[in-house]
Amino acid sequence: MTLESPTTTFPLAPGRQKGYDPEAVDAFLLRARDAFEAREGELTSAEIRRTAFRLVRRGYDVGAVDAALGRLEDAFAAREREGALSRAGARAWVGQSRKLAQEILDRVSRPERHRFRRAGFLHFGYRIDEVDIVADRIAAHLESGEPLTPDQIRSVAFRMQRRGYDETQVDAVLDAVVEVMLAVG
Image (cartoon, rainbow, N blue to C red; front, side):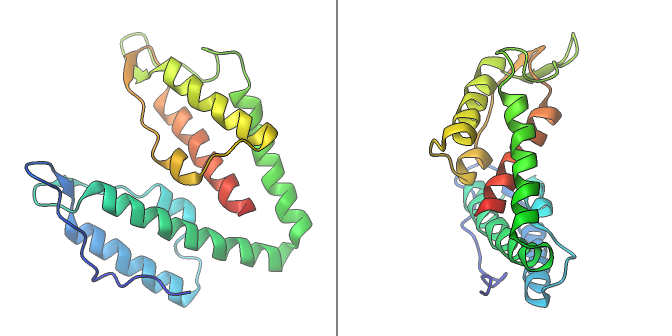
């Protein structure tokens, strides 16, 4: 498998909207292509998932870049899965993925409004009701195989509320959900 050329340009953000810094995006994609082709562990799917770019005027369209990053993450995850299967065997890989999936399920199965730590008294966090809806979908996926894709998890966005759920904790669980989904392929 080969990755798209990093010289592929993305459409610019429309109108007066800001987009991702083109130089940073191009540099990251070049680094990713080199890492993928070298088959070395200097870049992982988890690092790709956590990648963020500065918003600038005349930047690349956010949706187009995010979609490309999702495909890139999928490619790296597939390579990581193949490597882990050849090193540790299917049983160990499945066991590790199952353990992480159970930790996620334990978290998202907690009672509504009590699934994550709350932001401080004068701070904003993610809207509790919105996060709980996504948590229910994740639980249904893990328990009974209800349809849910990594892209749906990657693209979830929550509004903010005072004393909402702690953003860092929610984001970490969402990252773990994507990791499990990509691990089982």
